[in-house]
Image (tube, rainbow, N blue to C red):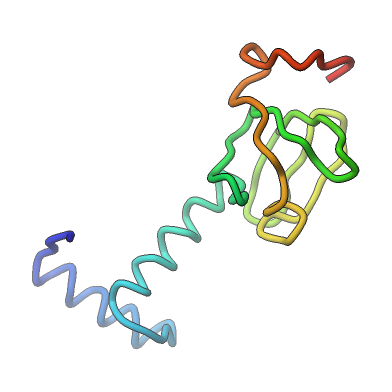
Amino acid sequence: MMRISKEVLSDIKLLKSLCSFTGSQQDIVGKLVKAELKKTFVNTRYGYVGVGAVVLGPDSVTLVVSSIDEDKVTFRDGSFILNGGATSFELKLLSNSIEDFEGGIINV
C-alpha cells in the first residue's frame, strides 16, 4: 500500500479528467510509471532491460542494447526494433552488461 497526500490525489484526479484516462487512481499511476520507464528501459517478458544489456533477440541472435527511446530500441550492430512491441517483449535477458556476459559474443 502506498500513502499519498491529498494534494497528489487531487492532482491525479485532475490529470484523469484532462487526459481522458479511464480506471482507478492506481491504474492511472501504473500507466504513468510504465510510460516513464519506457523512455529508458525495454519492457520484456523477463523484466525491464537497460542500455548495455546483452539479450537474445529475433532469430536467436545475441545483441547488445545500444540506445532506448520511447519508440525504438537500437542495438550495437545498428539493427533496431519498436519499443513496446511484441518483438521487444520477447527479448531474453542474457546479462545486464557485456562485461558480465560469458556467452562468447563476437563483433558486438
